[in-house]
Image 1 (cartoon, helix red, strand yellow):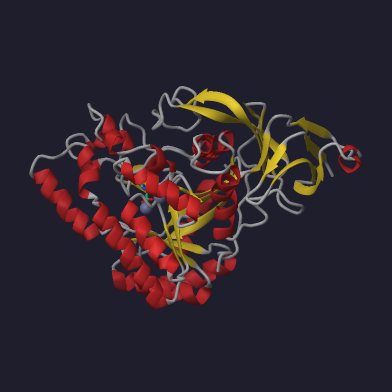
Image 2: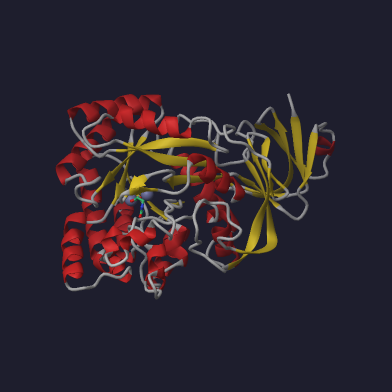
Length: 465
Ligand code: URP
Ligand code: ZN
Ligand code: ZN
């Protein structure tokens, strides 16, 4: 059994910061011992990694990605191969992607299709949520089987009528089923019916630029949908996880539900923490790069999101990585913002941007690891295999240089997309080395992984319940 020792670093988990050496045996964490102690120095190893001056972190868990997602008449530009490689570069060693049920088809068929896309191609480990597009007797029954085999979370949409949209009755039925089988309903909470009216009116009045994408997807319509989702979950007796929360009033709805003791959870994404409607308003159709739903909000919302993350009103930061190239894909919406494919790249930079938030004083180091590694792992039934550094856990480990300076750019990133939403942004901190189950994937800033190393992760149910 191969043995690796990581020595001299500061091990940071959601609960502790300790100067400890880490012994890895056969792909798992075998032991931690205080640096310099007899216990640590007695370990024999095939490989020794010097982490002096570095953080030793659990690999990041990005619980919201869309590799190769068919959307808006095109496909998200990252494949499972390119997207998981980029994830590794950024210190993310687990993704949970969304398999999609096509209207009129079974969940099984959708899941099989996503397995075929990912199988043998991933650089890091991956699991699946299931998008429920067609709630009916048969898909409700299938939910039970999926939960039993490790697909334990289901996304429903209050947005996108005619595509993924479910009405309140269908949502209630899916939630009732989840309350019985242990599944977690993930909600895209925007009032899509009302939004479509505003889209039609905006286009008719000649308001066609990307900035109007943000205008029509009103804060009130995110807050209203969030409120409605909470009430439906309450009636069903089901837990609820609200994805990509962007608006202050939506945070208020989640906080109010949690203060009542309801099992309601919230996720936000780096784009809502670092970008704003100013980006959507960039001239010359540049704003299309920032079109995603829920949309970017005015800057004032950012402070509420940071506060929500600090106070545990929000539990998770995922990327909602759904990249479309500017050239040929975002451009489909020139002259009609509603035709711009919704989604942004981000899987590579979540850990770095959140470390910058540590540097800037928004988060503590442990909270950084909690919202990016431990909480998503717990939320989606992967803990303590993923999300921590403790004996028995998978040896998904990031050696992170907290003092390295880098400039984010499309010229140097590894995602298969022709722009960066953070072009030119300077951040402090950078991944040096990444192990996935003890195997180096990034070594001293060189990619040494391979497609097919990443394995599928059947998941348990939500561990907050
Ligand atoms: O704009 C986004 N978020 N695209 C991906 C699909 C979704 O709603 O998460
Ligand atoms: Zn969504
Ligand atoms: Zn998404």
